[in-house]
Length: 384
Image (cartoon, rainbow, N blue to C red; front, side, top):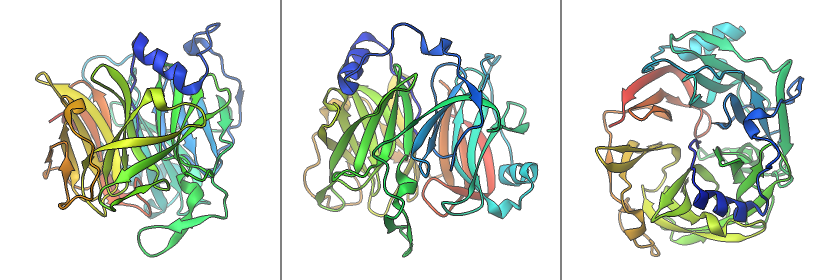
């Protein structure tokens, strides 16, 4: 997803103001906004990201919207939190009265303040499945998060893919392209960044929405896809993180088959068609699922969960020194080096808990990339 990091500092804030063509509202701190209560209109619960304390952003691809939900979960955790839950799918399914094989987990994120885990899921399979959100606390207790009378606001994406458009599912079948309207979210200095497919000619899009929500500003993306040997505009970003490279603000985005692309934030202006620079390739027929940047022993790394190699540890020091990959790769890997974490198998999601720990969602791949079906385990490990 992914999705799921904050950048601070005046340089980044200035670049993001350029990106959206709007400055963040100065009259109110986003953390102080009192959201109205009411029934949440949501078709499916997908990508997740936390923003101001307690505010959870939920991507609703089928509804073509992003929802800001006030969870009220703002009490800071005490000490180190390690969350380990076996048979998560069975426990959530039992809580809502369905069979475990009818539950599909779409995304998982850790509240950076409370360290509670939030799980977006579907009750059933396919685009018409009912949305579900659950919270898992540090003791492993699972509770549903109600959509019936919740404090929230939402914003519609005016460039959402038409519901009639179908694309391949990678298994020989067809699924609605609208399910990929939102593939990953991140909150960065007062803006919600939204990756996914749009209805534009260049359908791969990265949008920015100032919070509290105003109008959406969209940039469309073109990337050199070394595994395919061509430029592409229709492959969506699967997971991304804001990242500082050589003192400048970038978005590091991972696409299907699996180019890792750096995109200067300064170029992400409303209506711009942006060409990202590929700096790594993780092989053909591979789909990235989640990315977690971190530092350890003075070095920078990015954990990337993916469908082919499991989890890899990308060596992210001095990314500005790696040349762009501009030719078809002759091997399955190219560019920035990485180590394969072969001991980490069946990982469908990653979520950073703190500077020393990461949460794994382990299970079988569901009907689509980023979905997990049982048996599903939450496991906390030290960052490698």
